[in-house]
Amino acid sequence: MPKISLKRQDKQLSQPKRQLELLANGVFKNGALPTFKSKLEATNQFPLKPSALEILQINVGYMCNQVCAHCHVDAGPDRKEIMTKDTLQQCLEVLKSSGAHTLDLTGGAPEMNPHFKWFIEEASKIGVQDFIVRSNLTILMAHKKYDDLPSFFKKYNIHIVSSMPHWTQGKTDQQRGKGVFNRSIEALKKLNRVGYGLSHSKLKLDLVYNPSGAFLPGDQKSMELDFKKALYEDFGIQFNNLFAITNLPISRFLDYLIASENYEDYMYSLVDAYNPKAVENVMCKNTLSIGWDGYLYDCDFNQMLGLKVKNRITHIRDFNAHKLRERNIQISQHCYGCTAGAGSSCQGTVV
View (cartoon, rainbow, N blue to C red):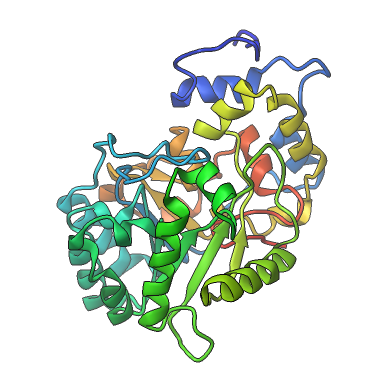
């Protein structure tokens, strides 16, 4: 493949193929980055293999009522990719047979899939008890048809995980759009009113912090204390945990890194912070990601780069747990984002 100059502004940058080419072949003034594969080989961790499947993470569609600057899905109101009822039914069949104990729904705004409630109801009927919904919060305030979502979440004891870049309006709106902070605060109050995030309640409400610039997140526990103090003192809001997630150099965040001329420094910071202990608990080992069209991926990030599972079984309709367990996990340079420092996953740090 030809070397790619970071100064080149390509309108097709957000396309998966262009992103992968850039990650693999970007020209850096300080020389080429070591490959992620070489890092794994140095500690006898290559090839990366899956463990028992615990979490089925399903992206039910890229449509969203927001357009966030850091979004690795490139989600927004104009996205038309939505998982059909037939594909959701195939996911239910896999849930029956796979042994996965957790159903993790993401998007876009997963609540915007027209079959969202039906799917959760049907999954509950077949015995699924551990639900995660990755909500952007503002969807709860977007339209009257979503007004009953907090009560619906409560009925099925759904674990809510929501993005909240900061406890101040300026930093949150900068990353997620004007007015998002105030709507998020109102949504959090609605969730608190039905019992979410309260100390005496079993209803879990966790928040997600993503850095607003070209830097790695700070200490997760310290930030959690700061978030809890500020949100309670200013708004009376309570929540359970804060997850600090590293922004991976793909999609809109990759566009930002290149436009701001921070791409090289950011990639070197990820490499310098590489932690082999984080590799032991990366989410791709116990999680399988399913795209809106039913194709299978090792993680949600690989999904956005078009890196399907390295296996003959690539679609949910052909699911075979035993054969998928034998695969090698697909890796590329973006994987440094999940193994930097204390590591990063959809459940926060891993070390």
